[in-house]
Image 1 (cartoon, rainbow, N blue to C red):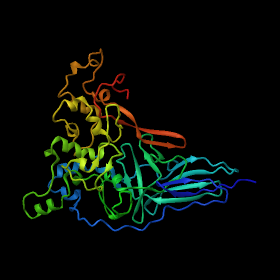
Image 2: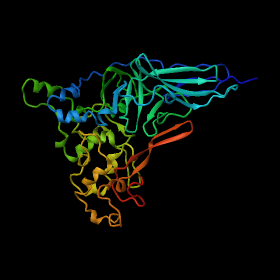
Image 3: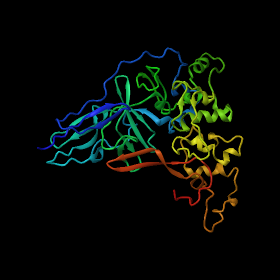
Image 4: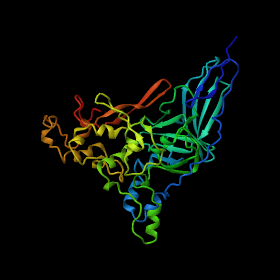
Length: 410
């Protein structure tokens, strides 16, 4: 008797929807069902006014900032924010080939536009008996420099969609961390996850592992107020012709507080949350908000997301009382090419002291970075799609000598 394959997208602990094989017919389930929401937090927060309120007085900074990866790290879905093809052969991804005439199921995804909205649809089953389930893309995360992932709303719950777009190779892939050959529509998006991709959102529960939100409260992207603090009172005081009030300038912070501000999102994952997401105020010590992960000299910080931890290991940083992230990065401007950062290196270092530079025919004055901050594979951004692995490479911020690494070989 031929085996009849059943497909089920079943929600389990940890937010995993997986392709299940059974013997009693076919069924393609829906996305997770909304749950009862908890009361909203009662504590009032300073008013956020949005980047538009900054343009009138700070046009130079505000205009250039609109094009930065920070600002574009999350946006509402639309034709200007979503990358990747939604028509033609490139809009379909097959991860499991169906075998005609057999009970071997297939799994594919279709990217499509319906009534002006963008959708991801999973199609599973044996030929002639496929079933599908799709969800609308509501929020785009990622600037697109390396790729994008996508979120969708189910009432007031926020979930990640199973496919991401990988800019290198211009291809659809399983979202990093998703199990290959499954259709997963139930990975919950928690407040701490959003904190590094959005300026604000109001959770409807004090539970840090709840994904219930006030949808209207979402402020996408890393905005001016992420670093300068909520600007409601500052804007009101200016409108009334009064002196500046309640606005922060990170350039006036101590080095430790400047690094803390960057470390909120650039010091790695896995830290214990000591205060609710989106409650950190720039200029305050970060260790009262997130408990640092204990490290020792034998531990290698993850190259993705731990730029501050890596920088602090660098001799350049340890030898300087003032070096910080802003020594090289101007957050108000789009990121420059790697080679242009060499000018910062040469404010302290002499080209003549570099052994590579003394080699015949070698010119490295404009590219210290590839040798001393090479790109390295990350263990945090990995996608396996149809049995093929895609692994991101990130530029390390541990500035040092890397034996065997030369410019242009990364």
